Amino acid sequence: MSTHMPAITSENTFLPFGDQRNAPFYGKDILSVKQFNRSDLDYIFGVAHEMRVMVERIGTFDLLKGKILANLFYEPSTRTSSSFTAAMERLGGSVIPINEVRYSSVSKGESLPDTVRTLECYADVIVLRHPDVGASKLAAQYARKPIINAGDGVGEHPTQALLDLLTIVEELHQVDGLSVTMLGDLKYGRTVHSLARLLSLYNVQLHYVSPEILRMPKEIIDEINKKGIQQKEHVDLDSALSETDVLYVTRVQKERFSALDEYERVKDAFVIDLDTMSRAKSRMIVMHPLPRVSEISIEVDADPRAAYFRQMEYGLYVRMALLAMVLGKS
Ligand code: ASP
Image 1 (tube, protein in one colour):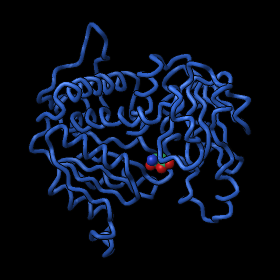
Image 2 (cartoon, rainbow, N blue to C red):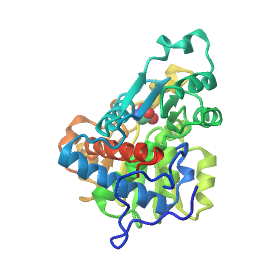
Image 3 (cartoon, rainbow, N blue to C red):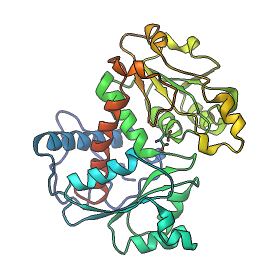
């Protein structure tokens, strides 16, 4: 990772689109949020902003014309897969969609390394979602083309964390000084694993609210502690709500439970409703990576502080930025 990347400031706006093979992310994999520093994030958000302007002005443009993305999903997806498709198509490129690996040679027993070595013969970049932690890293060891991690089991979801952070920046215009409360399934939720790590680059306070069996993994808490970030675990939301600026709600990840009765016991442990909202800061935002099951009641959707539908749109711009960057076009 280059350390020579310019921060995006008003004096130093990022270079216009074009061939920039010396650009810091050209040819790089996006595997974990651990690979980013604050100036990387400024750079990515600067490019994402330009993408938003272009989409609003002209919708689709030819920055990645002739480039092909392979979207390889071994687990279900609605937003990540379709936003990468939309991102590639808005940039004039095309997509090989492999959303149902059971119809591909994976069902014949093909290994992940062989599948990515196949797809990179046809595509310029591979977006991979897989149930195993570390799958993207493994794929990247075999692939010559960039691999973008779209979720590796209970590990990480770096592109989601980038869009989550962009949502916070766009909605609250600051990250330093915020109190962020993560609620729900902090054990299996890969989005909170990535977001907590990314937020630890800023001066934030982190609150974790979860059932006992779904606490934030100790290794993540230890990792973030080393950065000097204040973290506090809670058994109920009330003890954190009044100081919360960002309430990040997650779904209990049913598919990760080996015993369904355990899932049933905790699935409705926390539900955000109008009563919760009435006790929260007037400037707080509620986020959720979606899909939502029952953890945010639908009456909350009409509250202007509900940011979860706006959050998805930021994902399009972030993913357009990442594709352009790894393919050397910004
Ligand atoms: N869509 C997110 C993910 O893939 C969150 C979720 O599934 O609950 O991790």
